[in-house]
Amino acid sequence: MKKSTIAIGVIAAVMAAGYVGYTSMFGAKAVQVSADVLNEKFNEYANPEAFISAQDLKNMMGTDADVVVIGALNPVKPDAPIEGSFSMWRNDYSAADGDYAFDGMRNSVDEMEAILSQYGATPSSTIVVYAANSHHDAARLFWQIKNLGHDDVRYLDGGLNAWMGEGFATGNANPTVAATNYVAPAPQVEADGLATLEMVIDAQSSEDWVILDTRGTNEFDGSTTVSGAFGPGTIPGSVHINWTQALNEDSTLKSAEELQALYGDVIKGKKVIAYCQSGVRSAHTQMVLEEVLGAEGIYNYDGSWIEYSYAHYEQTRSEVKVQNGKS
Image (cartoon, rainbow, N blue to C red; front, side, top):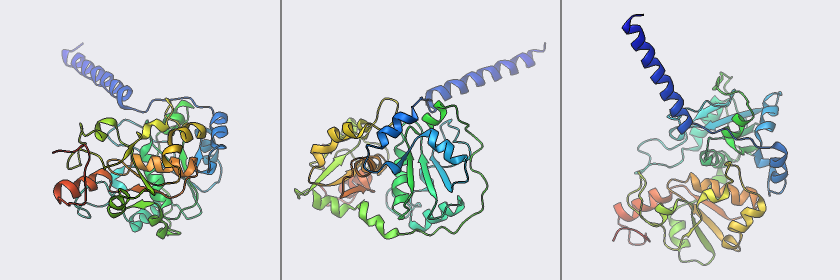
C-alpha cells in the first residue's frame, strides 16, 4: 500500500474521531422522558396547552394537522434538527445591526411575520418551538411568537434531547413549503409582557414590583462580565434565581409544586420583571411564571443587562444605578 494512501486513511480516521468527540462534547444529549409522566405534569400547569412531549409532537406531525415546528439551534454545534422542522438562530430573530447601539434585542413584528410566512404558518397554525440541551432559546422564540398575538404556541419539553431519546428521526429539515402571508393576529399584545428600561428604573423604588435576575451567580455577583455587556453588576435590589433552577437534571421542567416552592413567595402580590444578559434566559422564567404558575403581571426585559449596563457605563445615566459593579 502506498504511503500516501496510508496517510490519507490516518487523516480520515483522526478527523472522524475528532468529529465524534466534538459531537459527544457539544451536541445534544439524548434523554428518555415518559410521555405519560410529562402529560401528568402538564395537567398540573396553569396552561397545559403551552407544552408538548416529543411523543405527542411526533404523532401530531404524522397527521394532517396544521403544525409548524421551529428549532432555535446554534449552527456551530453539531445538532441535527428534528426531521421536517425549520431551524434558525438568534441572528434570525434579533434586531438588525444598527437598529440599537447594543446587541440582543428582538426583531420587529414585520420581520417575524416574514419568517413565519416563509415557514408556511398561518394565525391558526400550531407552532411548536424547541432547542437543545438548555432550551432557553426555545422560550425566547415562544415569547416572540406569543408577542404577535399567536394563540397556539407550544414549548417542546426536553427539546431535541427528548426527541433523540425516543429515537425519532433528525436531519432532513427546513422543508420547501408554500409561503403564506402571515399577519400577526394582535401585535399590540407585545407591550403586555415587555419591560423597558424606564419600567426597570421605576420598579426599583416601588414595593409593587420585584426584579428577578435569572443569570448565573458569577454574573449576578459581578465577578463575570459576559461578552456584549458594558460592565459587571446587577440591577439594584434584584432577587437572584438562576433560570436553571426551574429544570430537572434531564432538562425538562420541574413540577408545578416545585416551581411554586421556588418562585411563589418571591412573586406573591408583586408584578415581576425578569432579566438576564439579553432577554433569553429571562424569557424562559417568564414562560414558567405565566404558563406553569398562572402568574399575571410578568414582564421580560428585552434589553436586559446589555441595555442596562450600556445606560450605566456608556451613557453614564445617573438614574441607572448598578449593584456589584465597577467602582
